[in-house]
Amino acid sequence: KRLHAYKRQLLHVLGILDAYLAIKRGEKRPKRLHIFGAKAAPSYVYAKEIIKVMNVVADLVNGDPDVSKYLQVVFLPNYGVTMAEKIIPAADISEQISTAGKEASGTSNMKLMSAGALTLATLDGANIEIKDAVGDDNVEIFGLTEEEIAGYYQRGDYHARDFYDQDPRLHAALDMLVNGQIPGIETEGRDIFNSLLTYNDEYFVLADFESYLAANKRLDKLYQQPRIWAKKALANIAESGRFSADFTVQRYGREIWHVVAKTPEDDHEA
Ligand SMILES: *Cc1c(COP(=O)(O)O)cnc(C)c1O
Image (cartoon, rainbow, N blue to C red; front, side, top):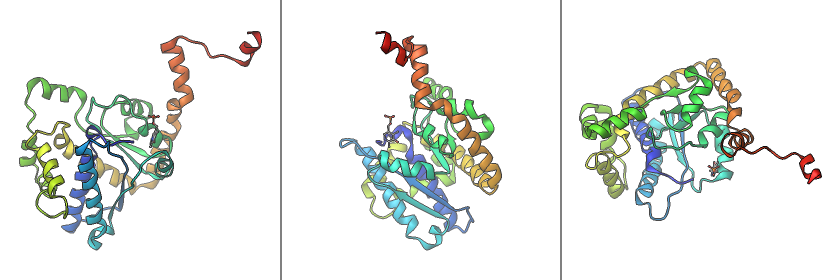
């Protein structure tokens, strides 16, 4: 699958940079391994820049013995179905963190849910259907709603820089892109930093940073209670049947195309 900026892997990267800085300050964190996988379209420069940053952040975090005890990051190249078959069943958390209003549906969210991951999500696309299926207690929701984002557009009063100025943790994570703390991303770090601050953060990454961290903190705490975690994971697996391909095709046939499935007997009569 291809990387798209609206899916906000960048928010995930900023969360990792925040965790890196916290661990460097001596904060104890539950262990986390973050997995990225995505391809870039040949002409999508910004996607390539994000992939570059993911790779160097992985080098920084994994190469620092103070940090890598608690936090590791991998970028898996050539993400496709064969690799998805291995990663998806292994995942504990499914990060579905697109800007609300941007994702038509999403299918990876359903795949991860059916394999027992808990969903950390914005109210976007099929994340909303997942929440409706499992209930508020079995999914971790954060961030601006589609309506709140529409409000920013209508009033024209989204100022990404205010979040940078007012949140010291966000400020420190963003500065890492441009202050040389991450080697080898002079161009990419500056371009991403400018897209967020000079060009006012088209995908509301900065607006959702604080609530994303808070949701992650709730999940870290929950992971310390394995039976409760397992119960929530099981509720997700149990409710995922409605997203199966067979059910979906049947429902499209009934509700959209108004067709009735053929049976073997129909062929005999023909
Ligand atoms: C599911 C999946 C696909 C197919 O996606 P569709 O939305 O069904 O076309 C392709 N690549 C990967 C990595 C997938 O996990």
